[in-house]
Image 1 (cartoon, rainbow, N blue to C red):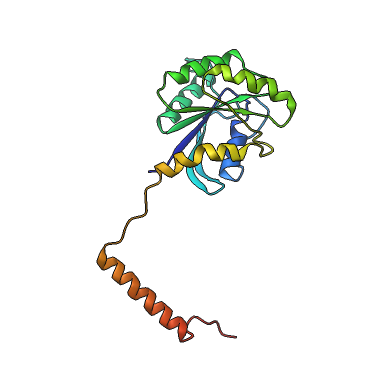
Image 2 (cartoon, one colour):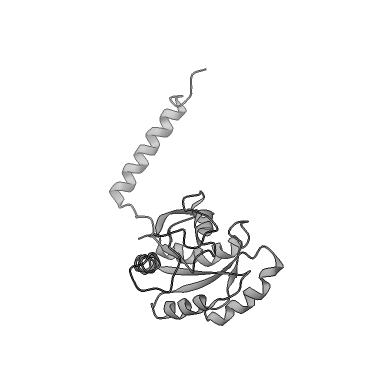
Length: 201
């Protein structure tokens, strides 16, 4: 079992930048054009020492028809079905919008653990947005700047116990397997003592 995290939020709040930060390379498209990500992507995260699956979703749009916006919302809903937890991302510089509030209400009905991330907090201009984010009711928000890497340790501290709990313990060896391993190690060490492992000069 692998812990899976879905990053969701309205368009242009920096979800793909946060996704790229967690994955450790630029896999998701990043641009200032709202709605650029029209499907969800998933990849293995290499976030400090944590290994888990992360999903970058399309922007949540308040639409239920077959338009691009409607399909984006449908893809986000499907992504949540594969996730253990959702990070709702809002923009600290612009503050909360009616769309943020609408989808916060929608997320509460999904019966899924949700934590709130306030992105673009690299300057004091985001302070008001951080305080306003408490109104969404997901506890203390985590201020970050995905672009600059600020706040990543706080995000790590949030995720570590969840990832650790979802990681299966190492398989214990039975007595016969343990004896075989010890014999193999003894043979390796004996060969090393005889110089079998030395490289030629």
